[in-house]
Length: 56
Image 1 (cartoon, rainbow, N blue to C red):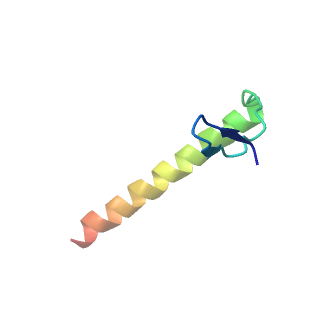
Image 2 (image 1 turned 135 degrees about the vertical axis):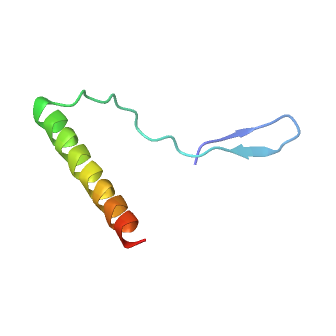
C-alpha cells in the first residue's frame, strides 16, 4: 500500500489508483442500439402513463 510519512512521523495512506484508459467513441451499431433502446423506454413510459390515466 502506498504511503507517505509526514514531518511529525505520521503515516498518510492513499488508496491504490486504478489503471487509466481512454474511452472509445461508440460505433454505428452501438449508436443504433442506443436509439432503439431509447424508443423502447419511451414507449414503455408512455404506456404506463396511459394505463395510469385511463384507470383513474
